[in-house]
Length: 179
Image 1 (cartoon, rainbow, N blue to C red):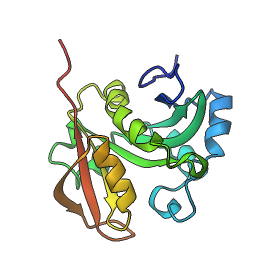
Image 2 (cartoon, rainbow, N blue to C red; image 1 turned 180 degrees about the vertical axis):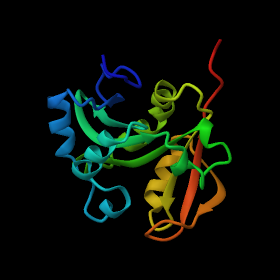
Image 3 (cartoon, rainbow, N blue to C red; image 1 turned 120 degrees about the vertical axis):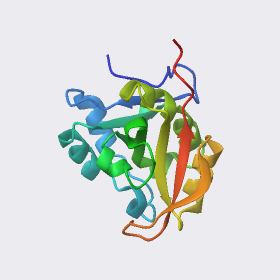
Image 4 (cartoon, rainbow, N blue to C red; image 1 turned 120 degrees about the horizontal axis):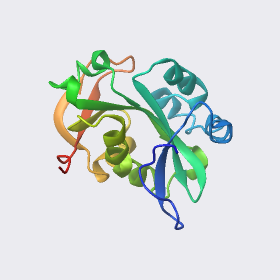
């Protein structure tokens, strides 16, 4: 059974489902998704980033599922080298990358609800994690607002190594695991 962030039984509910290499139906539907053209430079598209994630064992690709259908995509990355510039404890963090909601499904709060589920899936991917981190380009205020509305915190740190310019580093603290 694929890892999931939660159940998606009622209309309007959102869950995150790991895109397994043997799930042809989910993969095909996910590969067809795309953000708006003006957003693609920030996140890419699953048709490019999913094959990349398949080749890297520390990356977990997932689909955003709403009303029973994939409507978005993202990757959780535990590669410490990718996390070194973003957090003082890369061994305790998960990086959210390549995250987007398909252009046809934007404007309905799906991105915010999906981002709010990230911590649940991150715990399944990396039990030792104490935070999820991401970078959001300074020229992408709508995404920054969406992440903050989902519980991510912008403490003023910046990542200056991005190809598109300075980026905000946002963090989602994860509560301690119950014993």
